[in-house]
Length: 568
Image 1: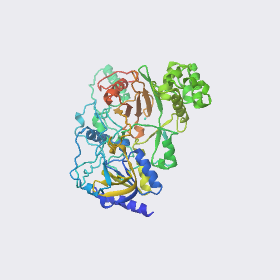
Image 2: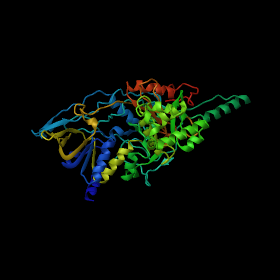
Image 3: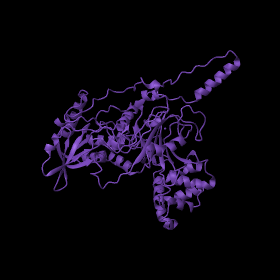
Image 4: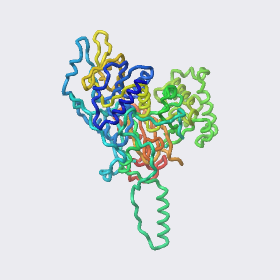
């Protein structure tokens, strides 16, 4: 209780302070059990577990936001993040007085001051920006001043590793509670770029329309018909409107969904962290075949209600899915194909090409070129086992974006006594030469903080330090659109789509489309995430698929094959 009271007093002091950040080194203890550097999801889970088990935890991050590689940004926040990652400036050190704190028997491991793993970041807008020059974001708080230590001129870092390229700025959907309480998580400290939880229902008039009136009765009838047709069409979303409503966006740097019976959901429920968050069930599993987007039936009810499948196909699909649920009990069915590809095994099961495509790309969601039979059967079984727990699909998505999950664990850590310091960079780790054990760190104030254990986000460590770590590159794109990839009666759909590779050897592209009910975008817009393993730059990897799914020209009229031309 004493530790909690001290923590509450500490945060109360921060909130009552003026906008300039206090000198954290004056109030931080010099001894901890665990020090965690970086507030990404793995680091936040570890910090929460250590704090709950009674360890003294210090959790620091040089950035001015929570989440690290898992952060979410408002529209203006994402543009600032893009701008920072496009800058090539190096951070210089004005002083090295901190080296005096290192003993002869110790050595220092310097930490990165900027994440250099992010490449080829660019933003593209397909709408006119002229009218948006003087538009300001509604409800935005004054920006905090840049935090600088007395011996360095470095600014707060806002770089991430996994979200490489972002095609943002382009213009332009039943709730599921994991625990009885479903409270949206707030930061342990005040956040300057967070959402307005209560959405207002007011709408902006995007454009003014004028029409000439005719004296003839025929002209009047035509005008009435035109007005009725215009009323049925969705309003155009302008760039100025997106800027003004920018705080309604929560744009993730990492695009992922959660299996309803996955390990992370189990962790959230068992640790009671789920009471800080609320989730929605993904409503549609989509497939891209022969240039068209179509919905895939997953559950038994969906299969038998589907109009896409013939009665014979329905029976074939249900028979195969039933087999996959307990395929381990029937090894004779697949043992001859254990060393062969899953796609080859599917061809032997008397399934139509349509069903093979659905199973491979939308249910198992495995690579056609690389995945073996056992991997495909395991993935299909996992998909089926997660059906029905919270809805007709196996996936969940957290309201306000993936950035909420690490914040939930940070809040749990703070509740049990953990201390949090954002905009608090670390100069180096201090390692004992004889034992090779990390003993302390030295922060940008020159304070030495000792601890028994250190957990460091990999973006802080150079590739030279992490010699045994194998990295892979991810291409990412985020689009703001004004129509869905597949139009239906409801505009509140959360969809996942896997687009197969066009050529052999290329990666499949995962598409996740979020609607405004996920609290990640403004009304009448969609947030669409594209992800794949990098082959080239993100633009080269993803632009061909973007062009297949969307119309990039705002002036283009006419219907596309998947239900209408989309503007971004």
